[in-house]
Image 1 (tube, helix red, strand yellow):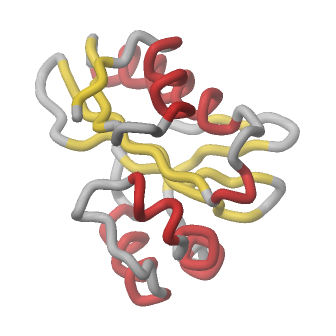
Image 2 (cartoon, one colour):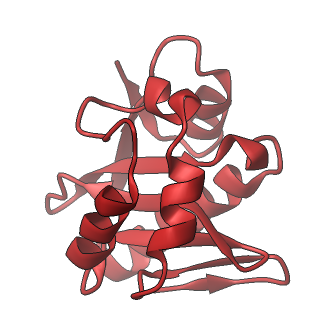
Length: 143
């Protein structure tokens, strides 16, 4: 599974993605919105582990914006018909519709390729952008 446009690519992880993933993911604003499994600080070693764990994955994907890995889109807790949507993007790229585009792509891909009919996402109170994306795509919000 992958997505490509003039500015945005969503693809499986590759060796070499670690540097920009660590750079853009090591941010307290991201960590404040993520569940406790998300490392903070998000170090280069964390990026090494994340990329290595996801090289053969069909559930987590690198979000590349103009050549840099700026975040992740993926699925967790996948069952026959349902999965948890996970998204994080470096704050420098918030409010550019990247998250909306990535979530739309993942929802369509999960339906077509995995038979997932329902997505849910853990959204912390006050994360208005995540709530708007979830509501627009009919993704169930959990707290």
